[in-house]
Image (cartoon, rainbow, N blue to C red; front, side):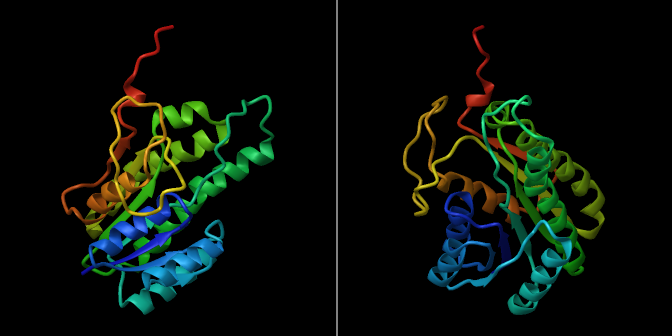
Length: 232
């Protein structure tokens, strides 16, 4: 089975992604700065390390140590980010804009740079979490810029890293619930404005991380909500 590092694990998507990979018998390691991530790693019998992914040296050292523990790296999933809010540009300070950009885009750059240098000649996969259009349209400029940067980095890195047999993709979720990290995918309706279970995302991430034919893609997974054309 494969060896995967899930970076930036919290109680929503990161948790569901970890459970999905574990359900397939993969060997996993979690990177998190929270007690939640540490406890989840213990529950899933996964390796765990605490790191600040905004600092490249921390990201590089952490991934290198986890590679040693895992015996190699077949894929890395970047879940770090956040800083969603509905405030507009007039309310967002330059400092908060940069903070949101760093927590989303810089952490992905650091993780991707470190991971790509640690994968052997067999290659592997790098998978990120971006955001569906209805999410970043509703958010602040910093969050939108950070998630948008991830999408374009994915497309650029997929092209540049293909000769090394490293695939790079992203999943763009709509609004999800963060209180159902249980691995179950309950029913949901298309075009629904309700938040849907985060477990749906884990299944898509697993496919992108393990399917050798997919690279350079940003898969929008929002139940079709972003495709609705406003009436006004």
